Structure formats: C-alpha cells, structure tokens
Image (cartoon, rainbow, N blue to C red):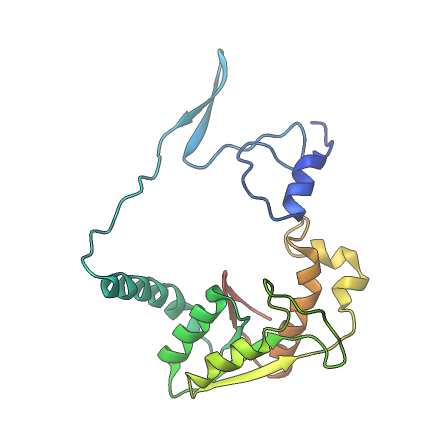
Length: 212
C-alpha cells in the first residue's frame, strides 16, 4: 500500500478542520464514515449506512429544565473521572468547556479541595489589546474560583519553551499522529508538569481525564 501523504488532509488536521469524512492522512487510504460499514465482495466495495442520528427536541417546558438536563449530563461525565487515590486537579482555561468541568468537579468534591491549574502569559510579556480574543485566561479562572471556595488556582507563567517544543519526536510519542494545534501542545504541557509537582495523578480537562 502506498504511503504517500495527503497534504490537504495534513493541513486540515493541523488547522483543527475536522469536517473531512472519507480522506485520511494517507492519500490511498480512505476512512469508513461514522454510522457506516464497508462491504467487499466480488462486485467490489460499497459503503452502506446503518445508522443516522436524528436530531430531536427534548420537549422540556422551561429554560430551567434544559439547564438541569445539561447539568445531569455533566455530572454523569465528570463523576467517574473523580475516582483517584490522590487529590484530583483540573486543567482550566476561561472557556466554557473546561470551566463547566471545573465547576462540576468542585461542586461534587466540596468541601474537598480541587486544584485548578491555568496557563497564563509571563508577567513581563506585553501583548496588544484584543477585543475578540482572550489573551490572559487567569482572570476568568480566578472569577470561577471565587464562586467555589474549595477551588485553589495555580497560574503557570513559565516563559521558556517546553521540552516538546525542542524535541518534535515527543509530539508523536502518545498517539503516533501529528498533534492537534501544536502551539498549544507545548503551552499546556506546563500545566501537566505543575500537576505532577503538586502530586496529582489525575487531571481533568474538557475532553476527559489524563494521567500526568
């Protein structure tokens, strides 16, 4: 099987464009789309669809009911991630996803302490004003912690490059694939290092939980 790289898909991968259903990093290898199966016989190969999710309304009457329904799903997702022999940490930004995970974990763990670790720019760094971008996520995380007395915020402001920025092979060590958003990979790795220094074995993030 030829191993020629599809440079368009590689570019999409690095730019976080996940809308391609069939093409892969290899030009001659196609993906079977979700909800489908490939059938191969004497007539050739065919893609058949066996399941298509249907969008439907929950039919709830009040806005508050939808809030509670969303909270229920967050609780179901976060609760299993809190099982640990050591205190749990959370990799936090000022975005809605990680803040929702952090707030849910803090509520469930209270009065047990929850470490919230956030990456912030070095104090000496001078950045231009940006109305549509959050250049420093520290204030948002501190505001979240003010709502949860058992949340302890640690800000990581190391201005040096991380080891993964110096050794590109480390980027492929975990999954054997190019890293999503490579600039963030080194930036956020500092929070994992901080979790290790604090003695945590589980750190929550918006996509699940990692073991530092």
